[in-house]
Image 1: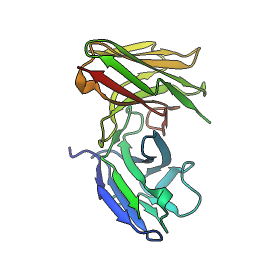
Image 2: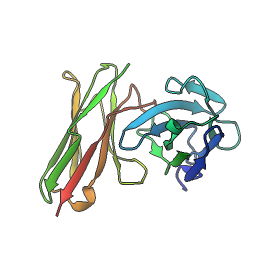
Image 3: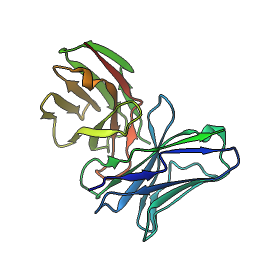
Length: 113
Length: 112
């Protein structure tokens, strides 16, 4: 079992560009969560998705951020017109609902220059 | 919404001593409490969890206690080793598999 796969591991974008972060859940997991971690800070919930559905996006900024988890393929977190404040580590996690704590991927470290 | 506080923010102990990290939560509906360990530059890893129908759970050198009335839970690490050095996060959730609210983390340093 390959675990939760995130790519890229590191992403550098100039201000105003778009960032696309990908997450493939563990085999058999149909629930995906995205968290953001600023340097020296904790993990902040962004969005919770199941296949083709957004279950909870209460942690997502209202503008520029979107997420999807299509029927086929990985979950995508998309950040449009990135700003320096978007620089952070973005972690994806997956679970089978009701099966305990979830498993995190290795994260994507986004740097906006 | 839920708010999780965690203390201390940093903790240094001598190798072989015990370490205790405490968390409090605000939402009485929370009933699942995992603990994650994150080494520098790595992913958070689940080390132990506890459900609200249990007061204590132990796994080798790690134990977690839960006081639902007071809305606090604690992580206990005994016989600490240098490889225990990491940042530890507590979290609270209304159900397993739902989104977690994490505490701000405790940086544990185990000194040889």
